[in-house]
Image (cartoon, rainbow, N blue to C red; front, side, top):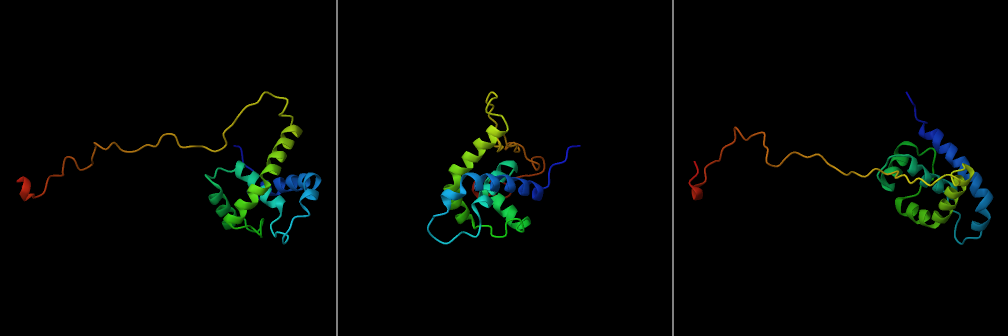
Length: 150
């Protein structure tokens, strides 16, 4: 029986890889930005963005709620939803650059491309037929004076 890796271990491994790459490729270019230094690092935000691809949550809100409820010790300065979305938009070019770098390192750029959808979409929903009723044999009309039903 295959076992999956614990979330804490996965988050730690991804964070180490992200932070090493970030310090080598991006950190110098982001040092001179105006404003106070953010409490949640860019590496943490990128890590969360990448972890969302590995876990089956329907959206960012549910994923951040899961992290906030169960693993806040891993990300003690987790941003609010609005702040996270803003930072995610700012960091998106670096997230894509990191994904391309990992693809090169893993050697997948030499292979034929294969596209996978990581987010399942519901296609068919099962519902009861509207013409069937559990009470069809026992139910009867009540009294209706205008229709002469007794």
